[in-house]
Length: 286
Image (tube, rainbow, N blue to C red; front, side):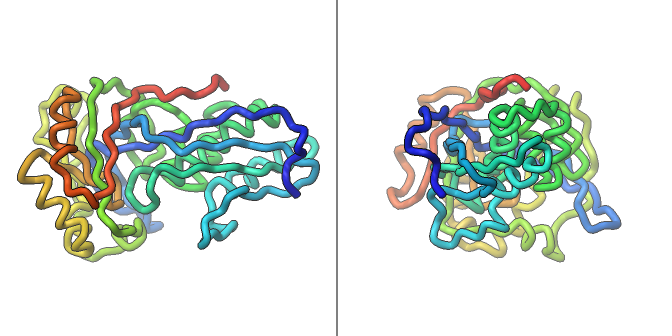
């Protein structure tokens, strides 16, 4: 069943993308999860979500992609996770407009899940705290809590130990090679570095450590020629980094002019985004 045609217009909720400014794997737990250190930086590239009331208990996506599987969709799973907290079980139809590419390491699915938790907590009047939502979000994925915290952050553990930090405003040119990188495939690779020495927040922010990279980069470059091609091209022109365990490569700039200059040199067929950092994306008070 679709929402009533007489419903009032619903607000659009933004689910921002993130970049991992660095990613170190410092160990592996007995349960197989990797211990990480990373910095999450939000950028002004966002998916858009609208939540439509229903008169039944169903939770569905209004405009699913062709290969959509409800049980794997993080927005649907997030909504179903909240249903037990409703005094009267409510349903919702989620209208989602994707701009963040999947499999790119930009956190689109996790951000959509976090935005769903935050939005429905408000729309269903559940009155859960941000900490409670973050704990629920962690059951959906290690990256979900930082989107609920909604602030640039240092993260450790499996990504759940979050410390908000201030990062100077920057411009980023993000280039997306034509491939989908599986997080499970990268973390399962035998050659993945899993013993990087831990660093401190203070040393990182003070610039006292060597430039921090991404321990997943070597594996991604080896297994995905499309990423390697883009990486080699960018490396000749700027410092280039990999975000998360995806395909997205990015270059950082202190001014827009330099970012535009490199953007204009890109081969026309490469998908790319020129974005600005956001320390604290718009997020309603909980």
